[in-house]
Image (cartoon, rainbow, N blue to C red; front, side, top):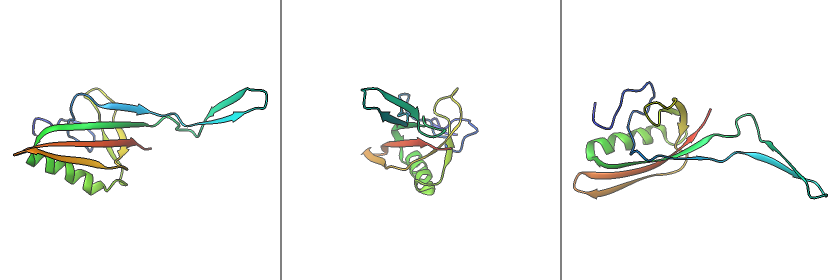
Length: 119
């Protein structure tokens, strides 16, 4: 096990940098009435799925290749489980958007990715 992998029941075992960005955009339906009032309700049963932006900084080539290979294997459509932090619950995600790989210098790589929660 390498320094940035950790023991977790999740499929994705790579430990990101310690500053994940969690974004929750509740899905709502809003109906406006002619008298200036509006009524809001949640849209669907699971209206608060999260998006998580992760960074993996300064990874050696071997580790960066493993992370990129994981993303390529799932192709943005195959769900996988991940635990974002040691005490966090394991959740199911996809990488619908892009991931970025920057070769910083020599064997040092930076990777950024956005996970979108799915059910």
